[in-house]
Length: 178
Image (cartoon, rainbow, N blue to C red; front, side, top):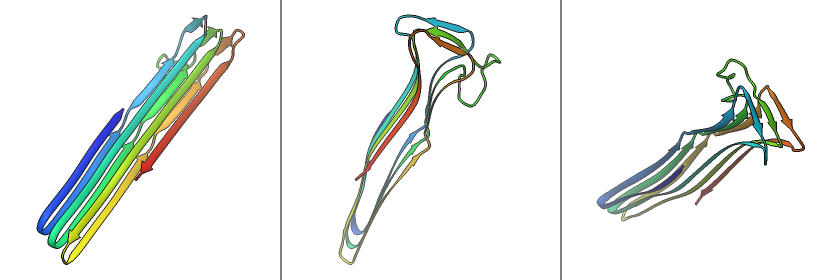
């Protein structure tokens, strides 16, 4: 998921009033899973992987120019509510199997269950004013993140002939406010 936004407000005259707001909203579920029954995997083994990548590049600005009074305000909001899940034995981390019994039987040379979530936000917020009598500029930003990244094995059995069983979840968030 990627969002790119540019919002600019400009006002001029005897009294100048300018404002701008940018909103980037992410709300996605990504999942990979195997449940019920049995799986036999040879060669390199079995891999259940869920990956979610999101990014936002947002620039928000406001300029007020006036002979008497100028007022400008700029505000940006990034809201992220994503879930990333990888699992053996369940289709989600919070509910039991749709088939009525958690678990899956796996026979493989190796087994890997991994969930990865990466968020990168680059935000620029600028405000400026020029006024004869009064000039006021305000800028702000709000970054909200409620992301969930989970990987797991629920019930069942894994037989890894000569290999390893790896289960891992990684979440990375980078926010640059300029």
